[in-house]
Figure (cartoon, rainbow, N blue to C red):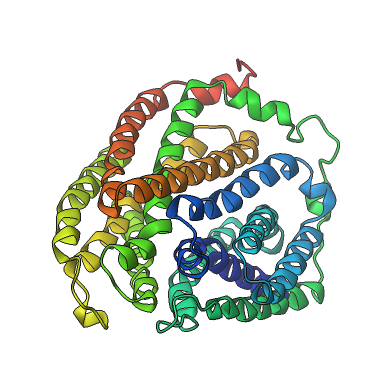
Length: 419
């Protein structure tokens, strides 16, 4: 199969970074157990990752084609491989924060390069769509598997044990395989440099101009609050399971896979449902059901707290019900991304993708910090009840976004009539 080394490397790249990115929730729980860190302080792990993604995306987006996609991926994989082999030998809260700074920075390079490389190694639009879907699906496989990978290294009998960091040896090995495959493969990037130096090449100013459009502002608010909700739940679900439901650390991590699985399932069904239903009504309905699930699940968590739990069958019902919120939240993000991109002319898609990455990262940072603060000062139930506030704001911002979608933005942008 043509380009099989590069294609396989791209799959492994996304699998590795799905594990690394989403391991922040596990790290938040474990640094509390290992180093006596408060929940509020542990919440800073996520900003280390997300702000790095935002900053690197902003700085590099316009120049990565000139630097080279293969070179950028090799650089990112090399850095991550080295750090994954180092981190188990330097167990400290500071080292883990540095790990996630590196993860965020390298993922920004990987994501931009992978998306661009797909266009180079596929021969037509059907193959492009197929490969994009396979890679995104593989990302979800990585997200789901991380809970079982890390839980196999956690020592339930010794909460202070840093043995869980040994999982990074395995991840580093996978990153090294991806590096070798990519290094040994040929990638002709000449098509990516065809327009180099021409005026239509993305510039920083294009990003700021696009941010002046009302529909883009409404989208930014929507994306920000969605990711705030998603990361609030995802990053603190293992901590909630351990500290509120009193599940053992290993089980707390494993049961986080329910959220990942329900999210993957939700996105699969959304792909079918949104072909037949209006995206706005489907998403608002999902958000209202998500809010109802939060309201129903939190009292169950309060009532179940204090039980002695040893395995999956002993886990309280709240540990199964609350993560199903992923099923209801899952359709929102892909749908609004698709709507905003289809509302813009194609030359603006690259700049808009940069804005999506940046404001999603900022939303994730805020979600983690706010949840960590409330969890620390009050309790886990209050922290997750708080998600009702951004859910309400998101419904309002989506209503504005829907109204603005009907305006002739594409024509205005194509004629250069931007603020």
